[in-house]
Image (cartoon, rainbow, N blue to C red; front, side, top):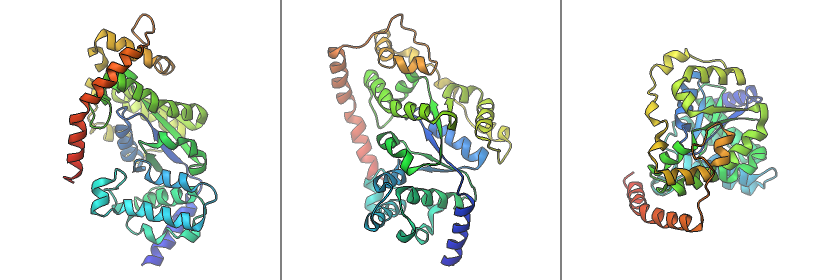
Length: 320
């Protein structure tokens, strides 16, 4: 049985040798999850959501790793794909949707892996193999930290960058369980995360596609059609049948208008270049950069405001 699975996977791996990996880039709160669900249901993508577990393992290995390093990274990846109780409770990289990886260990032979790219490709391909599809995608929220290794880890890739009006993006983050709760701090958070994504999007040229969150919510079929045309993708099902079953929340647009005028001015000042580049028009008459005192006060408010958030997060880990 093991031999037959390996033979079938090797055949799949060879048949999909030239298939790119689609990398979904976006700041948390920008609509990456919505976009991924649409890609899975309309095009039958195998979408890996692993907070960069596999990608980072590939980045650590690089182009010429030792066999010992390869074995170590295989063990690290598999221990998080099939986590024990402690790993599941304490590690943010623990995978819970691991059914598509049953049998993965039979195809991760250290002797057949010669680089970080080989390791990443085998893991992503195995999930696609289990899902009976050729299309591979990843959404890794933490990839901004190691995106400089993307040429080595994913030499054959396509970039899909989704942006949400960065003012709405920062407002969304202030209500999340993981990030800043103070608007100015959230604006800096968005800028920090977006910068490497935008750079990779620009660098990718025709191998990249930009999705605007508002357009995806208001005109999903048009966005899907443009993405399909750009990458020559064929829907696996009727897109309208899928879209009609989705809940697109138009109320999530222009929530930034509830910000105080001074907060809005400072947030627009922090994100001015990004707003202009991606077509989100600032409403403040002139760019206003918050001074050191304003920023320091925002840091203090954020630290105080995040105490309950951190307590809830810690408690939630041990309830799993």
